[in-house]
Length: 85
Image (tube, rainbow, N blue to C red; front, side, top):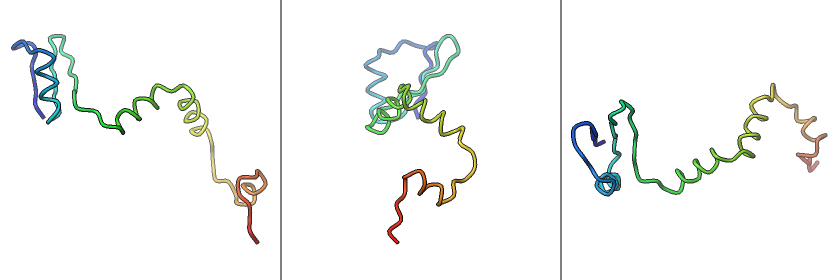
């Protein structure tokens, strides 16, 4: 990981992005905040899209409220599972 302290010098966005192609870049800003920059892959983009999805967030919220196990008999009754006996 490469650290760039923006309080100690000027760097163009192009320079930072060029570095981020080969390694993670930690930017330390003059406000004291830190930012990580790295090249995104397909998985990163999918995670970002799902994180911004209200429908997916609602699904996760509903799933987090489920409690206990569901007996196999109940699964069959709900039509999610069909026995082949």
